[in-house]
Image (cartoon, rainbow, N blue to C red):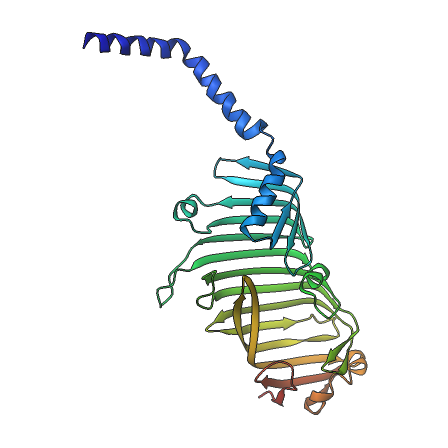
Length: 326
């Protein structure tokens, strides 16, 4: 017993004498690991691992990478270049990924992602544990904020057939199972497009060319939600007083999100939209052919015409059923 006591006494004397040295050793070790360690040299390794994990469907390249542990784990990337299969390349000035500790423990995709300079705008995404569905399916709470995304860049990525300009802002809160075993619920969605511009173009509708006139809108506001496979437009404000077109839009459209081998795409079904639009004569003149289907539902107003119609159909593409808006 006396030998053990003597050894403990010597150990504590050693700690007291060399405590400062031990502290400095730990401190400089941590500094090297998390401040001085050249994480950017791991770029090729990180890129190859991501490529392997996604079966070469996602390629990620970047100039610099950093790691912070406080106040929470965070990976920061500079000058990011992303290639996703079947999509044009994407770039971002800064990409910050902050995994959740609870998500790491439970092996769930919880955490946040911040991308600056993505599509010339900013995107913030936060994923956390959400309320289970009525069938008992685990769901994630997904909150997304998009600010000042360039519509020209979005058109390029989405391969849209029309030429558009403007800045898109979006806020949404959703409950979703990321494997899409069940359809997601979007309880809140707010969309604002500023300085919207649709350039004159012609699109092909099954061999029938349709000329779309140019249109400029100061702002477009839309609020809606997605429930039971239907997207409801609760309120939509089109344009402002000085624009050629102003009015409102409400209604719904069936929309089912499908998972095709990891790629998510919407499938649209029946729809019913109520339009109350006021058009200045200058726009009505250049869009006369485009407005021919609803020409019987116009009435003259002070500086143009007003259209109050309800459009409905079983799917987008064929001409809709048209009736007057009561």
